[in-house]
Amino acid sequence: MKKVCQNCGSKIETSLKVPGLEGVFVCLECEGWMASSSLSLAELSNQVYDETYFNGKEYINYQASDAVQRLNFRRKISLLDQYNFFSKDARILEIGSATGLFLDELKKKDKSIQTMGIEISQYARQIAEKKGHRVLTPESSELFEEIRKFNPTFICAWDVWEHLDSSVDTVTQYLNSSPECQAVALTTVDVSAVIPKRKKKKWRQFHPPSHLNYPSRRSFVLFFKKYDYEVIFQKAYGMYRPLSEYLFALCPILRSWLCRFKILYKIPIYMNLYDIQMVIAEKKNDHQ
Ligand SMILES: [Zn+2]
Image (tube, rainbow, N blue to C red; front, side, top):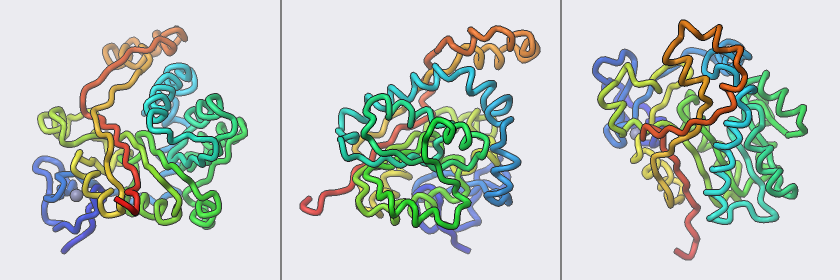
């Protein structure tokens, strides 16, 4: 039986599994990994991406570490600025906009930039909406119609690809609804890095059902080529995390005691383990 690789879009045999990883398929074209989830969007929204996801599970305290997250988003904006994606008439669609921190930073840079977010977590969406951002739920029956009306010129998805159940199908639908989109930028895991090859199941990024698709670098070269986009930037991408996250990982037993020191959430520590990639793809010009 064949199915579409949700990392590169190629057709793959479902019999090829990653040794040692139960229920995970590997694509021979891109070497990406694919796990599957039986949860619906509504179940993911209520059971996985609820308030505890941002306060205790994936993040210790997302809002307390606000300043550190903003630092990461400002770095992304300054990289993307080099390509002039944020011109006066830019319309930016962020897939997985969480509490709207990236959208906040874009508005700070230039109020005239039009933005729209898509976010599965009702908890995060409400925080973003309170700040005045327009954020849609992927469960909406009018989602694609709304994207078409907004007509984005640029789409980004920060640390989202790995979370989507059908990443290729989902991003393809967004691209098909965005005829004037000129570029796509994303950060996600990189299964072709050294760490996942060595650690497999123990790789820190391997945790279904919140992470389901694990692309390689080649995944995006193949995926974007199918849609007439060209990868113009692809590199390992480090990020800042609050000191609290390192301390909690090193001494989990002291966690409840360390939680009291709010300053720990505000001190940024940079780390690059070369297992996260930043990809920027630009639509090929008709004249090329
Ligand atoms: Zn593939």
